[in-house]
Image (tube, rainbow, N blue to C red; front, side, top):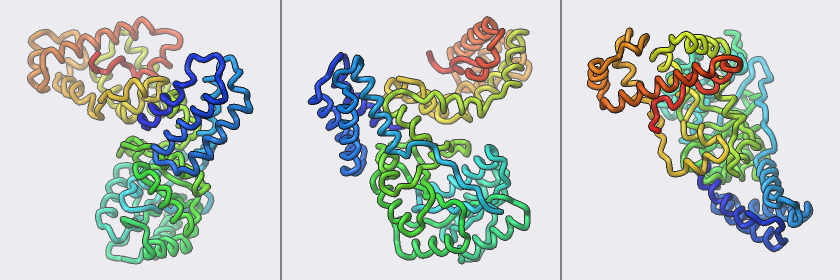
Length: 448
């Protein structure tokens, strides 16, 4: 996420590295370089200039040039200004109303329908809401089918009216249906166009007026940079929406949308979305993203993701199995499945301080565990329960069955044994928390 932007910020700040005192000229040079970085990231020039003017003014006002550690003080000022530029703090979604109505708007291809499903799961699992999805895109048949598939996968009801081409009527009927069924939240997915046009704006405006949503969210593809910001302004002029959703943050994004959109429309970014997995939706925290852009990592978000997947009961059960030497490959496979739910591995590792830069040119595919899973699933139930019985003959059979080499099978067995020894040694006070953080394993079969 934003690796190129982070790298350019790092280069811009290198000017100050190692100096115990810096001149006001150096501060001005660094601010100018940061402005160039922002413009390269597709941030509007006026916004970039205002940003760096504030940084320079605060740095000189704080007498950074005479500070004992001027670089750290300067970076703190940049971080605070980046945080303010993106909204300052997290913004809650408004769930007032019976039912609460959330209207989703945006261009075609921005990820509205997928976001609608993700938001439904988020509200169901995190807010304990009873959610209804309403299929209001009457122009793209695949959108209705997609919403049905998403709804089925997260066990949420979806309201559709096949053949009805009136999205205003569908939205109103969907809300009435939710009220009748005692559902407390309605998410209305609307149609998008390839570009902003009068017909689209008129339609979304009529839906908005009819359903009177408690929350209107504008979904934007973060990879479109300044175009996304211009589109947001056009929608906001018509809808006066409540918040922005940035999708595809794991793509090849320069960061312009995230850094510009709040300053342009004066509306908070409420959610960020990465990937296609339904769990891959996060409340947007400007300070955490500022940390990541400046190479400081995001430990808080990483811990939150881990805690969302692991609980104390499971961690204690694993600890007990390690102590009694009962941890087998079924448990190992279960831990892999849990880790996969956390999201993209490269993005997760990038939350560790300094790792974003280190992983810039490292390819960690989403299916990094598939070879390990293939090997484990080629074992018999008894072999998974009791790995000690796996002899050379069995290893050869497992290699053939999984389509992997004997070397890979041996490597996995060695890593598995090393992990068991390490975790057994760590058993004791605090071990349960370690199990939660590590997912019950080390390396998970990844190459050393």
